[in-house]
Length: 544
Image (cartoon, helix red, strand yellow):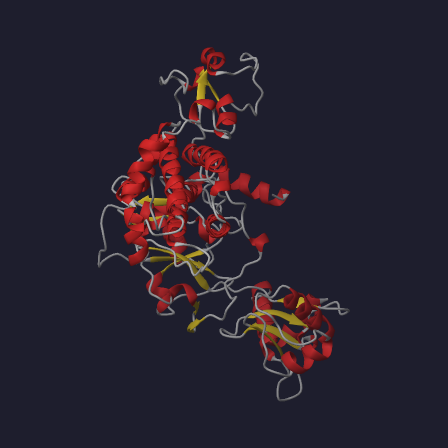
């Protein structure tokens, strides 16, 4: 950060009672509050799309919750182990000090076991980014893995799908399905294969089904192939994709669904686990191994329509992973309780709720999780003082925690709260002092009437409008010149993402006295004991 920010942070560490100023933590980083697998967020349906002000609440316009990227702290990823603490060559647990870790996969090895495992590197001087020999094997089908028991498995598959015998693709399709069945058997025996052998137990992984909408595993796929279940599942629409493709036979559609299920296994692993952690890397290992088998035994024997639909599914999975964000979470012991008071994390800039917790206790837990993760806070938080600091923040409208106000949700809904006043910024193209007589235009929030900035000329307001227009979330009609601004915004009623620009002349022809009121408050703070008769002269001297 800047030198001033570093000094402020150092002071807070030395004195836990000093409250400073920090950037906001991204809303997606606030931990989720769970009771079992149930999300305890106490929000009502409209809470996250409303603007809350001391004058009341309103449904926000689209784009209202957009915040400048520079307002946020850098995201701190959840720390998870990258490797397992046992040797994959001799399969024994050991102290991590005696192991060397692969930089790409989750495997670890004793140095004494590396040569026997096929490593040709100097085991006494391995590079920092060392990759184990097994990583290279993951990308290929080894000679010992090439032999597939065609006849025995083929008879099982043909019997399972015997009701599809009239399909023109039956003979070729059953051969491919038998190959896939045997590939699954190979994958089950591959390193980490036990992780994908059976369904994940949601009683052990509490939030798994909150993240993964369609669980899948090797055992389930093998069983469905043995039983021929894919025929009925597709006919009844059970976990099936509607394939409107006249070029695909029924047997080809079955093949696609089998291939999709295998890809689903890896997608679920990569979606649920934190990127780079040991379990995520297990998914990468098996995905690489499957792709090697697929390329050697399946791809060239598969019709174009099947490959096109499979590729579309892979793209949709990749997009879902890109848009997902694995959140921190914590468990609470009790369920819903009528006497608990919900706490809202409130952004005073956009005047919207970004997160809610069911009680002060949960809010305290969430604050400490963020603190322990390494996020900067306005005040030094410890296990001993966090309860006191949250109490102060709930009562004092000037106190922020992680860039936000923390307010009882009921107070927000009933408009029983105050906002700390902010100084109005002034846009000026030539004038040197923001005197009340010079302010001609205000930029305001359309819904709440909150004033963001004052301008002393049409030109400075137009320049601000142009900048806002260029960064707008929603498309803005018009050609974007000054006449467009004056006619449609300044003298019209158009807005950009809920922001309007308006002239502030009063009936007397002078300018809006709200600016003078604001300066009167500033004057009163600077010169509180000045007599009314002296105010004008003293005020003008203060401005000069």
